[in-house]
Picture 1 (cartoon, rainbow, N blue to C red):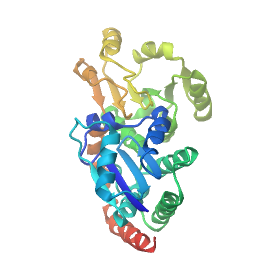
Picture 2 (tube, rainbow, N blue to C red):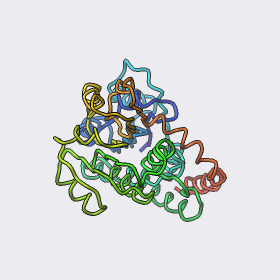
Picture 3 (cartoon, helix red, strand yellow):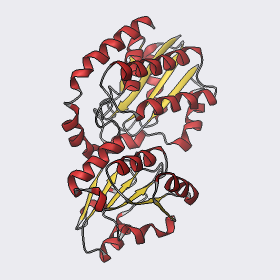
Picture 4 (cartoon, helix red, strand yellow):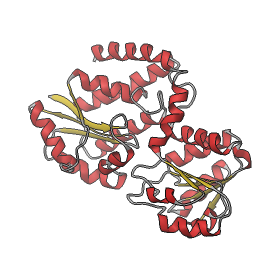
Length: 324
């Protein structure tokens, strides 16, 4: 059985390109079932920074690559794919799970996302003995790297970088009124980080009000109904959006209405993929929009603190690949 991976990530593809092939949670099951018609084993990993398809099959390597490209379904888009087979797949996945291949070096979130991808494949009866062994080893290697290196010190998630960017622009967040859109895992991490940075006035909005209410009770915030979103937008200083919606949650026409009654600037940070906020809103006066690509500046400033740990982590990965 051969193993292979085809993917696109943040290193060579912009947010606009990545969102075109992102596989949202509600599409994952049907996507996996379609792939199972061609491959013996499949795990699909799709996050804000990457979409990757891992397979185990008896198919020829060249045929694997062409079949996967067809299944992505965007043949008319010139995508900067990478494709690995054999040992190179293990090396790549170990780097991914350990946060070495992330926009935020050593990020925590990717290990959980890789585990979720594997569990989803198991639930769909899509991951067999080969990929199970590969992914379980990647989880173990990631834990070892965290234990034996300082790769995860400092900023270690997209949400923490977004909050640091907000601090750079707005100053002390304890005096700001903040709106978080999305009560999923990223929304929860964002809220936790804001609390640690002293933010007190946090509003939480989610498509399902009950979920927003539950998170607000646990972390200390104010939940609002989706119907009240635009009224709250007229009052807040900062909006961080991270939903799983397959379409824009905030459009230019919405923000035109909001900005008509505002007398001061507003900062919007979009950390969702596909994006939550229509790019055209950035043309509005007193509105400042940042997305995943814009977070790179904060990452570059922070990465130098951990660059010395990369060699140690890669040495561990090479050792573990040989064992596998």
